[in-house]
Image (cartoon, rainbow, N blue to C red; front, side):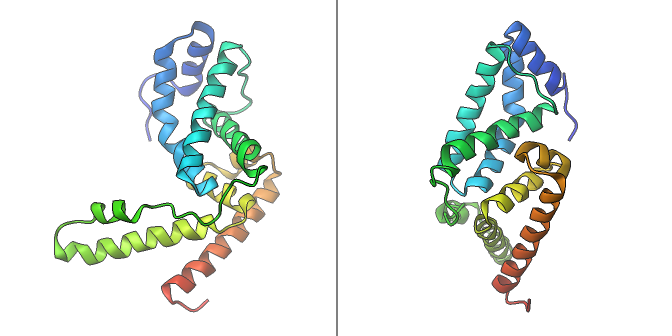
Length: 194
């Protein structure tokens, strides 16, 4: 994905040093959807994801206003680190995180289906597969789920290690175990032999 205009680092510098609201707005629009998706995958709960996302953006504003924003990695990595840490502090440690909340509203899924009968069968299978993947990811242990959620957002494993504070080898191991569990779970769902 090619980004037009100033890069994230420059935008954050403008916001922190000059209080440029347009720079912050650009950052927000570039990263809000990806951050929200990551948090939904991490928490399994869209309400929690929205709350943590808002708190993360507010924390970023506060850090910039106090001139305390000093990332050691890319803006995106720093943003996801803030969000992950906020989620761990506010939800995981208080045992409010859930593993089995459905990630899709069935009514919304039906509304998204095409009107043509020919396409309906394919769309139903595709939606069923999406729900199965969402449920399988939500059922992973939280340390594996966060690695998979970050990886699904396009982060390299070295950045996943930075965000989670885990060693690179630990991240690789968590991803391997998570993908194996997902493969087994989805094979059972589709009726394939393990």
